[in-house]
Length: 182
Image (cartoon, rainbow, N blue to C red; front, side, top):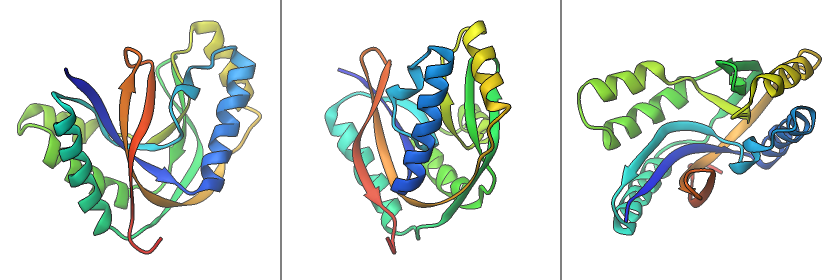
């Protein structure tokens, strides 16, 4: 059996709750609750397939080792952005530590060549607050965000291993690895 997994940075509780509040407000405004299918996080390794639970355990171990040698750090989220007209996100302002983590994970779990280079070039660090929006839903959510501001500093707590379930409709954290100095 194969599985789809991804890795994201998990934030401290207050920041997670604040991002979840934006997700809930946007869901209420737009009528689309899709963003609630995953916990707030910042993706540092896009989802990729593995072939067994043993592979999941291996990835979890590598992720834990990386987290163990990484000091916790501050992330600043400021403002909102979008991917096309289907996804809205909280924008990440500082990315040095995230880029370092992402590069290490991409190096570890992506085959050399074009796919690796493409993932590194396209990585936009963000925290999704609305996704899978239709045209009208997007317009309602975008209009709501025009009256909102976001300036949030948060401690990165560690890495989370996400598993896609229900035909990738939901993403659950199946393993967490704290950073040093938490």
